Image (cartoon, rainbow, N blue to C red):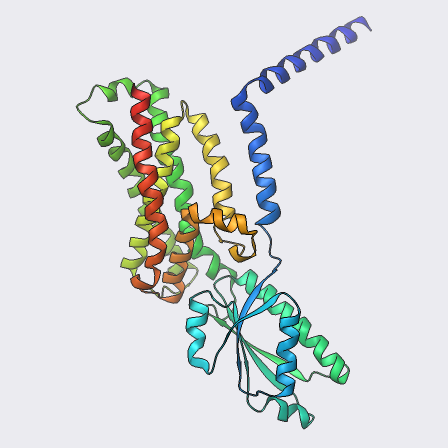
Length: 371
């Protein structure tokens, strides 16, 4: 019995010592609690497929009491928000391409006449297939509203039918929207790790002092550290695109030159972030922790899986500092839509701004480490 009590006492003292050692270190406390708090908040607000806002455009060729009643039901839900009223089908592409509308509802001119004659009428719903999960949820909402409309007017008889067409993704295949976006996401992960570990590895291996006695300035050293991750990243992007086109049969509708230019600008911003992390880290373990803490929010706030428009306003504002948001949007548009350089050029501005801030910051942090 005495042996057991002695063992338990030693066990208690050892656990107490480890807890005190762990919790007394400020850096460790940050690593323990910051990711949990940050990711808990982000997953709660950003990682959701619930649609609080579905902007839509409509083409009401019927202009009848029944069509007005149906559209009023949509507007009255508080979820569907009419952002455009189109006169003809020529405006559909521009409405969806510009992300003003998530869907376009088209009602034929003979809509009310068919219902009055006791037949069924069709409503065409054109949805944005670039995000299949969001499109499917929005289409489900429409089906529920039409089901209630049919039940109130004529029991369970199907008076109104939906004809669905998915823009840029006819069969709503999930990988069509997910894999092109993953080109940017996987690039982010690799670039942050490679660029982040570059300087920290030199310190741990003891070659950092040797690097400093070379006739290279700090700027030249960082440029040399930035180019290899960029080249490796480009090779990985090429592999992913080959996989998408030839294995998964996802058609590439845009220009390869525009796509690679988009990826290049996106990678520059990622390299700046990675080198800044590397400059402030004293070990590779620190780089891994900082990268993990930063990477998860960037992915969640990118719009890769969940729509940005449904996030709280403060998180929507925060996404403007996230180059992954603009990289995903630009790559998807070039890959799936066939957008030209002029049509995606607005995405280059925030990515270039991040690179313009983080690359000089990395140089300055690196110089401060030398003094």
